[in-house]
Length: 318
Image (spheres, rainbow, N blue to C red):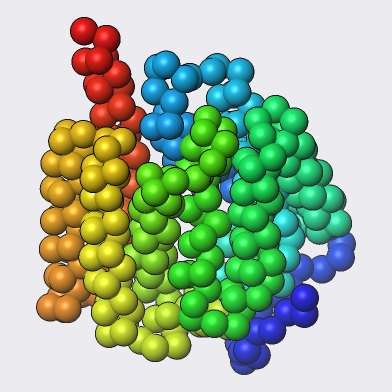
């Protein structure tokens, strides 16, 4: 798919040359960093939550669980690597990405591409052989949405990049779920909704903080194209939808009152913080608060899901 980026007149548009490896010797850490390990960690927590909610103690199979986590991690790592390969023309233009391995000349683009493809293929094989076909299909769909739909198309052409791209970030808990159930039901889709609705407020806040970076790179993020006012409006809408979506898991019966209470508290705080954006005079400070709370929200809500199932299982034993 052909790249489509608005042309910018700036002296800071550094395109990496073909004389790679001049910036220094490539280390093993570079091959880890190019897979986006930070994103992988949060996605694996979601995968574990999906598996644990579906399995509990009674259906928990250590071997299947380990293969689920390994296969998912490999697919996510492969997608992150291919993303780094494809974005090698715009990463040098952004302050937060210019020190990645490819822009710095530590890893050749062709090596990164094949590295990402191999990781992805290995991940799909692990899920298909070690887990089940549905888990492998979901892994492949996550890769397809992230690399083809998001990276190669929407990221460079539409403000919907963050919203539609959120599909791939919501698939990991589904992989965990189907590894146990080999099917998708309302509870599984409720898990999907939580992760899907979480991503727009998270990335809108990041886009506001890095708006000049995205503008310099020609990436049509929402605050770049439609401004902060519209971004705040959509942030509030998705925050509200997220908090409503998070309650479904209680009503489907897979999580208890403990989860419901924590989800309500987190939701009220998140909504109040989103509302604050309409009245703040310091947009950057507000966006920073929203971004940090989004990380806290995701970590806590997933952890509480896991703890809630554990508590419920222990109570059943007695």
